[in-house]
Image (cartoon, rainbow, N blue to C red):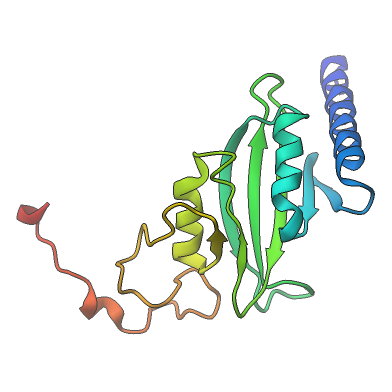
Amino acid sequence: MSTASTTEETTGSETHAQTLSALSSAMGEGAFTTSRFRDNLRIFVAPERLRELLGVLKDRCGFDWMIEVGGTDYLGYPGRTGTRFEVHYVLRSTATGRFLVVKTGVDDPDPTIPSVVPMWPGADWMEREVFDMFGIRFTDHPDLRRILMPEGFAAFPLRKDYPLRGRGERHNFPRLTRGDT
């Protein structure tokens, strides 16, 4: 390993340590858990503390850009316990180039978490996509409605219990021809 990459890794670890220290002092011990995967820092937080944690990361730690909001359905995942759904947020600091992932879990029958659109307006359509595909609701979202599927579509296609070939809904979709577009 070269000296430059070792220095970068050490600097990255030190900055992650500084971030975790700032989070712990702002939120208290035990407010979140962490893990690493391929040298990426992942922070797990309960849904009711999500906005607080993201606010600290944005205001005190310099993570000013939300790159991605996504969802995962872990129904039937081998060896997994806990919540069925997980929503992840990928944040980046434009000043330092660092990034990290924040995750929170929600469960059936009404998976709901707070919206982060008030903090990052760019999360608007990403939250709508997670809602549309997984059925996870975001409280305080300014316009939570379908973005990919038709308004009358009653299911959530990326849930693991949704059949691969659908449920025969295609006849309900409007037919468009090249002349209609």
